[in-house]
Amino acid sequence: MKIQILGPGCMKCNKLAEATKQAVKDLGIEATVEKVADIKEIMSYGVMITPALVVDGVVKVAGKVPSVEEIKKMLE
Image (cartoon, rainbow, N blue to C red; front, side, top):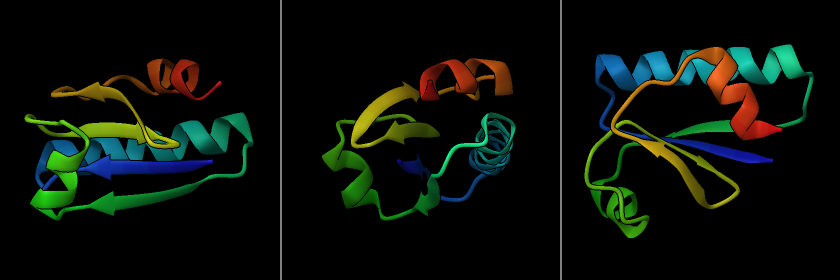
């Protein structure tokens, strides 16, 4: 599973990255979590507001930081 956190590195982006890593750990799944700060790459997903969570190329949420429990549901 490939998980991407889209955002310029703001506080919300960092919170989303931490919550996502916790969700992956809690679920015990194999996944790579990477941050994407390049604005052109972010826009290629159609994301206009960050942070955003992308799982295997599909945007799951944009513009907010979901809870660890919400992220777990997106990853299952």
